[in-house]
Image (cartoon, rainbow, N blue to C red; front, side):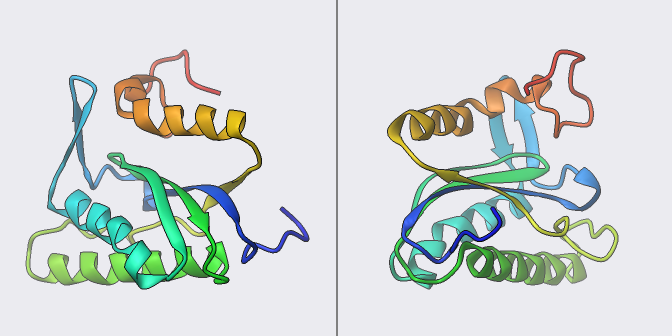
Length: 156
């Protein structure tokens, strides 16, 4: 949001998508996300955000086949852009390292699409809606517009 101080205390919802929407992190099976090694690495990096940024709390997250959702409370005085820049850099480095060793599948120049999508969560109602969305995201994969094989009836 133009003019907003993203280093201000607040609750944020962030989505990052893989480059070319490649499904690199695992598969959805019966509505449950089954992480592969790369997905587990990304999930581990999400879990490590709190120790990396004092004052940052990850409230909920999900690693999907080709994207990641994170809800976080930021009291770290570090901007969300910087948190995401470091997260993307770390996961990209680890992904390339695994690819060199033959474990991953490197596509294009990077792991992630440029930038990320964010929402400032302003109240409890908004938090509850987004938190539920993150929680049920794997079960709704067939309708997700980020899923390149989604049904015609997609989420808005």
